[in-house]
Amino acid sequence: MLAELHRKGGCLCQPAREGALHCPLIIRPTSEDVITDHLVQVMRTINPRWWLPDFLNSALGAPAVHPQQFRNLRIEPWVNKPTFPRDLLHWDEGSTQVDIVITWENPATTVYVEMKYWSELSARTAENRGEHGFASDQLARNIRVGLLECGYFEVPQLFEFSKRDFLQLVISPGGNQKLVQKYRDPSEVRQAIPYSHLIKKLPKLPFVGELNYFDLMNLFQLHRRMFSRAERVVADQFVKYLAMKSTQNPRRKNLGKSSFEQLPLVEDSPG
Image 1 (cartoon, rainbow, N blue to C red):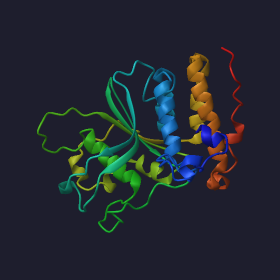
Image 2 (spheres, rainbow, N blue to C red):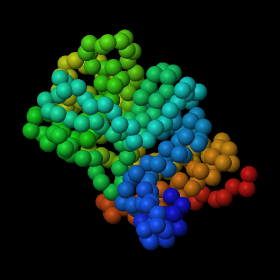
Image 3 (cartoon, one colour):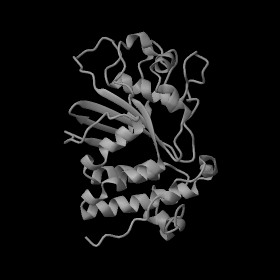
């Protein structure tokens, strides 16, 4: 993040350029992975009371979560989920990587977050291009995997397993993802999933939502006065970085009047 803010994005250090050092951390300004990494660090640093309820409620457009102590809160990036059971699909499918997984235990809840920057949600996945009669898009796959993980498929289990609340969110520069709007309809979710008759009941509605980058920047400024000094520094740096990345997005012209320029300037706090 600091490298990109100082206009060094996409550059290698001198030892790497000379071949003396193999650098696995090549910064690609077009990738959402850098944004994902820094978002996770901000989430882990700031007290969840001041961002997590607003994060979820804003994305869902409903008061789903109230401020509380989130017991056993975990925030993990790039989590590989096991291969979906072949007997629940009409095609072979590999493992699924979720950009961010947030979990806590009061009540037991799992949140999948899909991050986007220059690219859209994939309309096709490698193993399914729609020829099987079911949705082949990336969001449907994530929802299906999450519903299985959280116990919504009524299938034989070796051990007793209690259902978890499940939420699927998408974060993209401009929001308004058509697939998000589609899968907020529970009938569309069921039509997209093979053997959906095994899902007796879906999670509490709505469980699919989205945020745009401006929402995200506002989120980490909303309760800024309650942050510690260290939290303010981390939040302010991330807001500045995300604003910069937003102006670099080539799809920005399609987002309508830019919301990013409306963000109030963040002043350095002496305390």
